[in-house]
Image 1 (cartoon, rainbow, N blue to C red):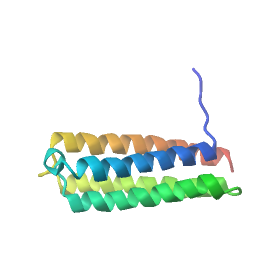
Image 2: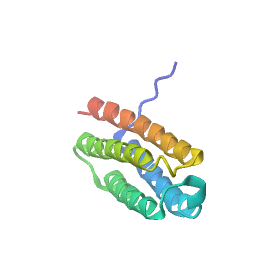
Image 3: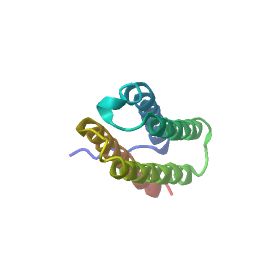
Image 4: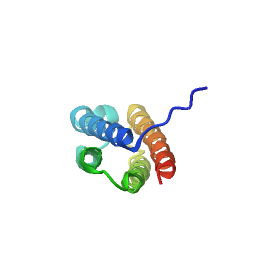
Length: 128
């Protein structure tokens, strides 16, 4: 089995692309079809703002950071983990109004982000 390794720089790019994708999905799909997903639009816009901040941070790290990349990678990994905890809390808070499609979206998003967190933490340890 091929064990693929990622560089800190490539993970910043992957993280930035993922955050942009999340921001677009939340603001342009989920917000437009609130009844299909079952979470209030104002909550989706808050999550969008968080994703935009993550995209800016990761893009800046990708473009500008030359030293201590592992430390910056740990920061975004921790932020991503907190985002997953927030999302799980929102699933619990809005379980009554969330549809099965909404729950599936957010659980899927958490799973993808947790995979990224694992890669970021593993890579940051390797580059210390």
